[in-house]
Amino acid sequence: MERKISYNDVKKALEDAYESVKSLKEGTVDSRNIGADAKDFAITVALADGTVISKGDAQVKAPMGSISKMGLSSLLFSQNKVEEVIKKSGQCPCHKVEKKPKHLGFSAHGIRAFSALEPVGDPESKWNLFEGRMIDLMGSAPELDIPVYQNLRKEAEENKVVDALAEAGYYLYDDAALALDLYLKALSMKASTEQLAMMGATIAADGVNPATGKVVYDGAISQNIVGLMAAKGPHKMNGPWLVAAGLPAKSSFGGSIVGVYPGVMAVAAYSPELNAGGVSVKAARAITEFMRRLDLSVFGSARVQIVKE
Image 1 (cartoon, rainbow, N blue to C red):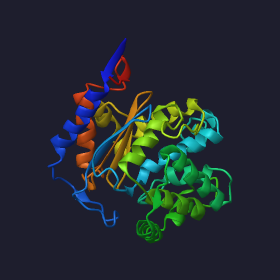
Image 2: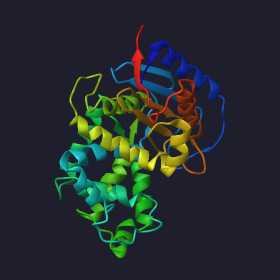
Image 3: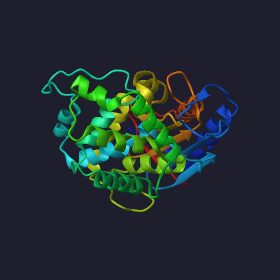
């Protein structure tokens, strides 16, 4: 079954979703999100053909946090077969049962992912590879928020993250301090909703940036990236989120959320005020409203096409 949705309907749904939640005041700004303005709010849709529709503060940049894993996972799937990525993540039955370190304040899996990125023992090359991939995905450069990065480093030192990883026997593929530092830098990279939506659109378009035309990675990788997004969801609220929004997504402590609808589009929203679970209240509501107004879900049986009249 095929379903055609007009470009005008997409634009109206975005504008209506924005208007319906713009006055919402709920949540608090994460203390790590230095300099954030609680009044900022934006939503952007990037279609798989490169068309961008935005409403609000779509140029404001915020720390990407866990959203950065979208770019990192694309690299790991580029360097490894799917089975190897699963094995390296420690999520397959072939892997020994290990004790995950508690109270790190950071994702042990995120640190392990950077440790698995090649080349091993070369932080500069690893970072250049990651940064280059993010630029290719977005079509423009995110920027490192130095104060946020410095605060995260201080938090990691206070929590003795490197020692905790060693004490738990948590296996890494590279030096722990090296992998941790790269992960903290990735969390601190700032991007706008327009950049995030374009990154999502590149994933939706099977690895081809629709704005630049650059082939960023093998198209078969996209389904793996979106699969991981669906498995984790915005701050692990994958079940409720997928039912409500019908869109695999990642979120950030900075207040951004980006979702990918394979073959169709990406949606990104931003508001720095978070709920108790660390997810932007307004951004989550805006994306859910947008999807609801179009009656869309990636789990629907219809093959969706956006038609420009």
